[in-house]
Length: 155
Image (tube, rainbow, N blue to C red; front, side, top):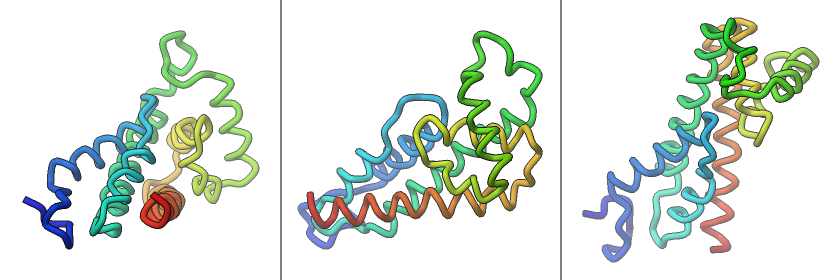
């Protein structure tokens, strides 16, 4: 059943939204998932509801960042272990950015290689969850809006 499409031939359904959510959630963790490609693919379909796709992608990606924030807040004592998922040099770089720019640096939480450590550092530094969510959501939503708009226009 197609509930997002204007044309009954296009089928973006709950399963597709689950895939979009899962890809965006996992992309915000240390796993190498490219949610932008998934969003671009769905956005390029005729009649796709871009607002719904961007909303689902943003929610999934922000919740994935919350996982990093929680890890930073509660697992700091393991950050020096060899198996720890975020490399020390990435943590150092994220710490420098955060210390220089403060909470607004969380607008960059979407960036490759910097975003995951940045959200982890925010947890380490005990950034309250509400400002964390505001900055991270703005940055991630802006990125997804641009991707969905470009894909709908050019693909």
